[in-house]
Each structure stands twice: as structure tokens, then as C-alpha cells.
Length: 301
Image (tube, rainbow, N blue to C red; front, side, top):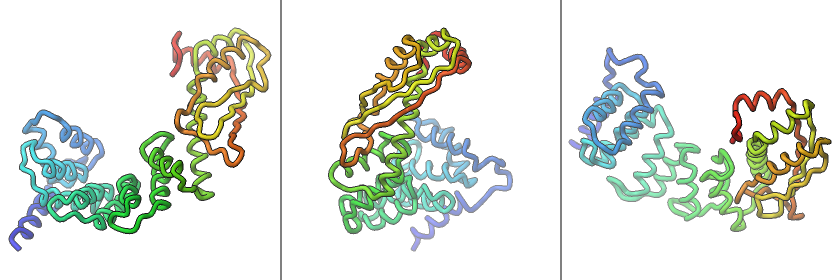
């Protein structure tokens, strides 16, 4: 009973007793970022701890979480105390659900209490996409509940921001191991892949030689390229199916296109084993002049 009361008093002192003189920006993202940065410093500085403690007491959710991390790990001017860490995480999570990932980690590791994978799943779900990888891992292994490979794949794909990020790699690992995508998941997969492919194409075409070749003609140039991807490959065969009418322009465009590769991120090819993408491109002198002003004499990367 005494321990429970002391923890409640600890949280109240940090989160409940809001000072009348606290700064107006106490819960700003900038203050939170500073707490994250200070908590990550390898060399302990007493002023850093005091800053984190002060804004945690004001009620900054990120600073509360960072102070909890310090208690969780120990050092940095505080003794390891899982009870205080958990209390801070709970207080932070009330306003910032993403903090639940830290509570999930404590439950999964058994920090301050027995390992509880079911509780870890619960907190990871509350955290949202922030904990998709951690939750998916438990679902893959059947820890804390039934094994659920389709559910894990859906989590990974839903959390993917771009081709090749951790969530994409986890999703693709299951897909290549034989876990099928639903029709909606295939659409999302292709949408993410195509968006990143087009961004990559734009970057690869933004090179000095292409700009100079177009500017030399003084005319807008239209070309049409075909990218042919084979199953499982992110590197296409490139052909020019409609040239610009200027051999120098076409040569430099093809050289730029030959550098395009998505690495291990391959498009879905279906039963044909082939995915072709036809890309119409327009190069206008005014556009290339503007880009030359931005890039100077070096390639824009």
C-alpha cells in the first residue's frame, strides 16, 4: 500500500501540480524535441536533467516520457526505477497515445513485473502505427495471443511510409515467404511502389547533362520511355519508345534512365511475371534553366 501511495504522489508531483508560472509553450513540440535531445546525450550534465524534470513537471508529454526513459535505464543522474518509469509513461500516454509503446516494451521485457506478452500487445495496439513492428512481431510468433500472419502483414503494410523502410521490409518478408496480399493490399503496395518509383525517376532525370542538351535546342522536348520489370527485380530494362527528335537529348535521357533502380523493392507482376510502365516525359527549356540555377554545374541529386 505504501509503495502504491508513493507512486501516486510521484506522478501527481510531476504531472498534476501545474505551476501557475509555467511558460506558455511548456507543451510545445520544440520543448519536447529538446528533452529528447538532452536525454540522448552520452555525457551526463545536471542542467540537462533539471530541464527535463522541470518540463515534465509542467506536463510536457514528451519530457515526461523522456524522464521515464531515464528512470527505466538508470544513470544520467537518476537511479533505475521501473515503478517511476511506468508511472511517467502512463501519465504521458493519457495525452500522447504513442507513449504506450514504451509501456508495451516494459511488459514484453518484464521490467518491474513478470513478462506479459498479452499486455504488451494491448499497449502496442493503443500506440497505433508507432508500434506496428513490435506488435506484428508478437503476432508472427504467436506470443500473447494466437499466431496471425495475415494480421501482421496488414499492420506492416499499413505502417509503411516508403519502399524499403522497416515496415515495408517486414511486410515484403512475409509476402515472399508465401503470405498472400488481399486485393486492397495489392493496390496499396503498387501505389506506394509507383509513388516512390516516380520520385526516383524525377531525381535521376535532374542532371546537368539533360538540362544542357534541352537548353541547347531551345525547344520543349517530349519523350516516352518504357520500363520493363521482371518478377522479383527492382531494376528495369529501359527502352525509348518515342524520342525527342534530338539525338543528343535522347542519349542523355537514356543515360539518366539507366541509373534508375528500386533495388530489392520490386513491383507486383502477376501471373505474367512482367510489369511494364510507360512514362511520358516533358522537358521545357525554362524548366531546365531554372534547375540549372539551382544546381549550378553539378548534378541535382
